[in-house]
Image 1: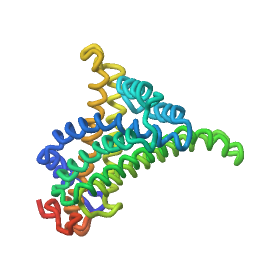
Image 2: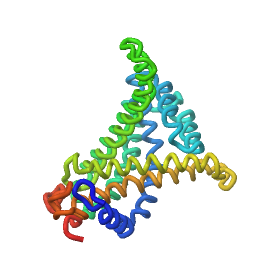
Image 3: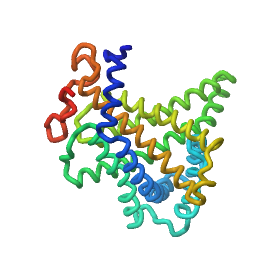
Image 4: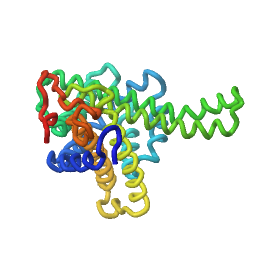
Length: 307
């Protein structure tokens, strides 16, 4: 089977092989661990940032309402409890406070971990100075908040907008049904945009936005399918609370983060193989990649060479 001038079978086989060779399963566990400890400081920083555009409690509740169908119930309850007990308290740091800056620094750590893991997926060595790496991680942290807010606006406020447009343009029920489909497609597009941003800026590789789209789409699809399936399992068959007691919610959240990390890193492996020309039907230049991708220091990285 061929798609976009690539033999899908050969590409999938080589990507799966590289996932094992680069220890993506182990790196996913490491990244999930850092995600867990970076998530709540990031939420603590997001609180005062969101308060600039409206009531943070109301906006966070809208975000939770949108994300509820996509997160296992135990994990959702854990995040909701942290928001209630930490982010919404009177003692929560303000936007320009030292506490907020420290929270942002800690929250950016999850993207620093992901940066190292993606470098391993792309088979490159980090050559950028540490301060540049940290600035990139902080930018990704802030960007993740902006994209999450945008997706929430599309999903929550979009229904009100379409009702208004349906009345003004006399679209009727059909127009509302179309919007219901379109809003989910827009939300998915924002997830793909976020994944693409990670692949462009985090690994120490020079690459264009277009070249990372296949991996971003794969990662977003894998994440969406797994999240839905895992939620069904936890809701109907899982017994984490009975098995682990009060830490059951933590286990569920870490498991969800683990497979989220795995989806992102596997998408990075796919992009790396596309750049290397794996599966290209007429040589490396026939595919999406050029066959040689330089790192930010101008040198070609190892995955660009024939495997």
